[in-house]
Length: 356
Image (tube, rainbow, N blue to C red; front, side):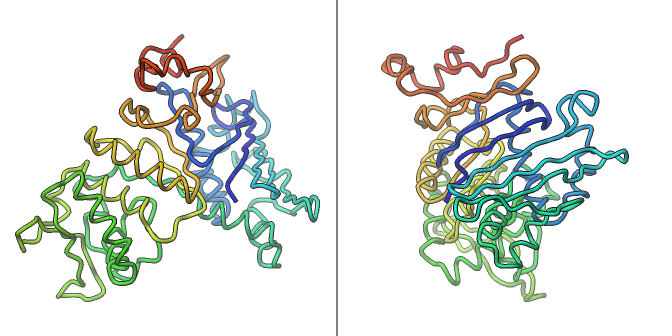
C-alpha cells in the first residue's frame, strides 16, 4: 500500500502543502526551491520511528531551523500521511530549549477510527505496534523503510571503498557503506538478482566482467569491494572505479535488490553519471516503480527526457513558500509532439526554472 497523499504545514520552506503521490514521483526545480527540504522531511520521519527524533532535530540545527521562517513566524509543524485506508498525523511544537516535542499524534483507519497516541519527546508508534496494532505496525514499517539514499560521497575516505564487516548485509545502507557485504550476500543467496546487477553495470561499463567478492585472507569477518575486467583475473579495488561508475553500481544494487523497501527516496541520483548511464537509470526507475514507490529529486534534463509528464512534479517558490504541482499530460500533449520534457523545462514552459 503506497503513500497516497502527504500534507505538510510549517516545515522549512513548506508553508502549506497537500500533495497526491503516485508510484514514480520526480521533483524538478531550480536551486533553493525546496526539493531537498521535501526529501529531508522523510529523513526526519525515518529518524522519528528509529527513536532518534530529539537527537536528529538538534543535528539539523534545532527547531527554529525546521519551522517555516523560524519560531517568530511559525509555531508548529503538522504532518498528515495517507496510506490507502491507513493514516498518520502528528503536530510538533518548539520548546524553549529549541527542541521539538509532540503536541499531537494519532493513527486512523476506516475500521477502527482515530486512535490518539500519548507521544511527548518521541513517537508512540513503536509501542502501539508492539501491542499488535495493525495500523501502527504498517505505518511504522513504511517509515522505517523510508530511508533517503545518498551515494554522493565517493572520496578516498568513503566507507563504500573501505573494508567492512562481512555480516553487515541485511539490507543496503543509505550511503552504500556495506555495498561489498550486501553484494556478497546477493551473490551467495540471490544469484538471479546478482546477475541482473552485473548485467546492468556492464551496460554502462562494457569492459566490466564481475565483482570479486570474498572474505579477506587476513580476517574472514571482513570484506571489501573488488572487481575485474573481461578476459582478466586481475582484481581492481573500488578506488579504481570512476566516481560516476561507483555511484551507478550503488544505484543498480538499490533498484535491483530482491526485497524492495516500501518506498525509495533519492536526492539527485544522477550526480556524476554519463548521459547514457542516466538513460539506463531512468529505465530502472520506471521498472522498479511497478513494484514499489519511488520519490526523488533531479536537475537532469537527460533524466527528465526519459519520463512521462505524470511522473514529474514541478517545484517552485511562490510568495516565499515551496509550491509543488504535478504535470498534466493533456495540457502538454501539443507541446510534446515537437519537444521533449527536458526541452520544455529548459524553455521554462513547465516552470521550475530560476525566477525572481
